[in-house]
Length: 130
Image 1: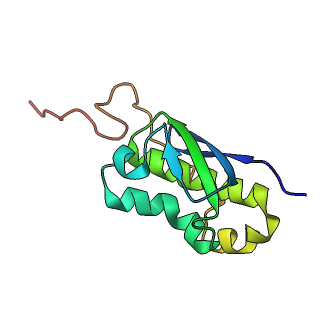
Image 2: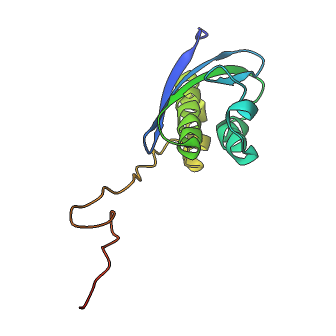
Image 3: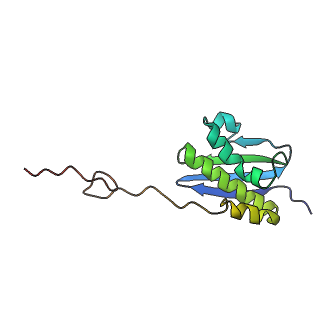
């Protein structure tokens, strides 16, 4: 039985991407725009397409992504994570190739919080001897 569509949620830093995947001609939209229009850097567009290249799925699925929060780099990584999860939900045979390339692992690194009595997370105020 073929699935109509699958969903995957990807996260990175404070960015969250909700990915909808269905069979189609390979169209990708991010917040209603083409990836080339949404992300200004070619590298970020390549990052999004990595899970599709690894699983040989380019041109097989139409992907719609809604992404919020964070910056452009975090959003691109969130989209990559969400696409990988959606591909896994659609076909479980993709697990080995996605896992081997690290696309199913959520990158938990976050910005360290600012501490009181300091200028930043680790930066201190300038020390004055006199």
